[in-house]
Length: 161
Length: 244
Image 1: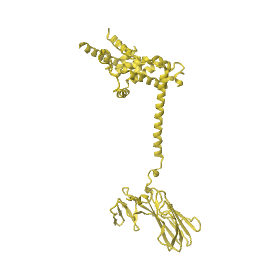
Image 2: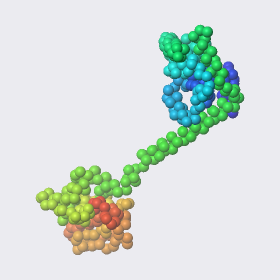
Image 3: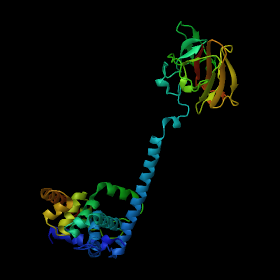
Image 4: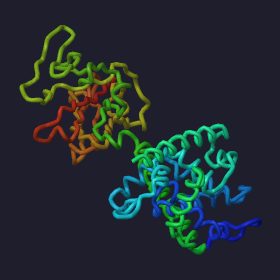
């Protein structure tokens, strides 16, 4: 057994893994729209975090930041989409009622979607979102503003039909 | 319900759709092990590629191109006292005249052209001349015997009547002809190694009386004996012996 998994002085990565895995999978699912891909991303985030675990001040936030970045990584997304294009199930199954809000969120560009999910599902502040996305707080504000405009437009169109 | 509450509600319901269980830490450990195996395999592959590249670079050029063009002394052709034109064969001699060979035509300084036959084979007379520089009278190995090798190409030796000359020519990858003399009354061949045509040949000569003689031999690439023969030129090895 890898000693780094349980021998951390402050908090072990195993403890964070068992405590946060499910929540992080849901976060990745909201960002990617794919449950299998979400679990892959979360596992990848923990594996990557293991190398820097001793130097991380807030392990939980660090892993979450890694999950967000991996979910927004366009190249990784493109690779996974190519690999899973024949096996991935559709987001909405036939006959199931369509959630227009969720569909509008999933139609947003990756960074705007990440900002919306972190703001409205994780209830994070703009500063924390900026840290997770690796950008300035002003960028988060603009991304959220653009996302709101796009969502309002999409929902208004749906209500008008 | 406000706009933002609708978003929260939709995201919350969507997140609840994902029923990812909470695995134990062993799952993470398996993932770490898989990563380490992957890294080890990748590292091994990179090491193998580097090893192959390193071997390719480290191998001497001669071993990779066994028919590298050398002069009669075994030096690279560029360092020899020869002239090449457009990678053609180097300077040669035809009937004792200094020539330059350029892609199928052998031309003497006087302008006489020696056209090659219709086949791609160079005429057997197209040979590489020995270096013009001469070194006189290399010290004999013993009082009665002078030993010479392929490194003595183009040199002049002085012998006394009764002394012996032993010619030992060796060049791996090449086939030597029997060394012979052009004046057997001055320098007579007394013995030659039993396997002429191999990459090593030895002959011995006796200095009979005063005068001058030349001892010469030639070396060919083995592919010259193939059918069709290759176009590798014949290299001439020659020394001058003055018997005084």
